[in-house]
Length: 67
Image (cartoon, rainbow, N blue to C red; front, side):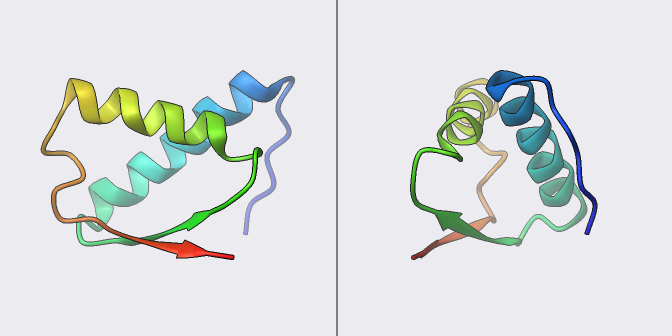
C-alpha cells in the first residue's frame, strides 16, 4: 500500500482516478469495488469524464458495491 498526501479534494480525486485508470490499463478485467459515501465522489466524477471521452475504456471492468 502506498500513502499519498494531497493538498485538496480535487487533487486527491484526480490522483485516485489516475491510480484506478493505471490499474485498469494493466488489468482490463479488473473488479472495481465501489465505496459509498462522499469521499470517493470526486473520483467517480473523474471516472464519468473518462467514460465520456473514451466509452470503451471500462468495457471489461466489473464493478461491485462495498458497504
